[in-house]
Image 1: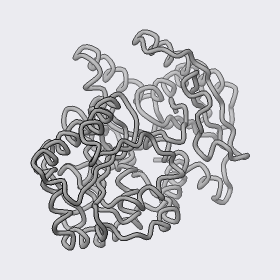
Image 2: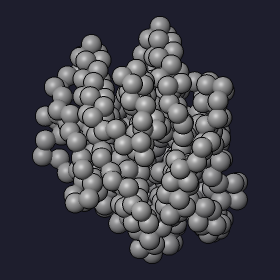
Image 3: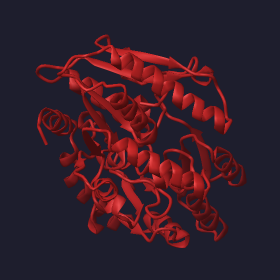
Length: 384
């Protein structure tokens, strides 16, 4: 995984931190080798908890720090070559090489195929919709080139897994082949420790948790906060922003504009997330689903449900694949005024929203970590 595995990382890091120990707890537990990246920016930062597990071998590729686009390509190439060279030395026919991500990890799968690494099963586990995620960061020509390369990379995999039914549909149409849907999962025991009932105290705490980026809808969240406060509706509500990313300055600016009502907390370690969720009432899920955005079953969404928090989400297939109308508040995608109106209603009429929270708990058993791991192992062992 092209990641530095920091404990305050995003959904991929959270998911990996959950699944690695769970794999080791299964009968006939596999040997686990995790290839990751590091650079000077992450020196001294805390890794995911699983990094300390004595039965997991973590293999680092050290890379130079750079914000230059050309050097970014060099970083990717060095990681791919380093990992592929290491994998070539492993010839166990019972092994599976699993690329976790999209474009970067798909390049390793393709390189492994070109280098003749055929005794292992080559698997790519899609964690989003790459073409949508890059829409804000690249021009049209670059996006087309990257999308073409991604498609070629993915066709080199023996099996492709998607982290949601929406991503499954998108990549099956793209590739013209079967993609297995294994949605994200939650360690239910960890979030059972969240005991405070949502929306029962004042002020109501509304939180954005996730990467501070365009595709995650941060701008719309901040615009909704501005409109809400400027219209004089802020009584009984406070707003928090958790995470890091390219739009961090916008979060800081919003907190500076409204210091009485808005708090930017920065990134929170995965281990501390249950305790943080116990302090909030409502979480927004604003990943876009159209030209720009993402896909898959959101790990953050599952954590909100598992901790009994109210979910306010864009009305799109990303979130509708998990929750129904009676279990969450859905707002038309991009409707900033509608989003602000929900904040006011949750504070003034909490009873109706508490019923949605209670109803949402019915779905969480379907996303248990045990079932997730069993599905993965069964699929890898099969011939499909």
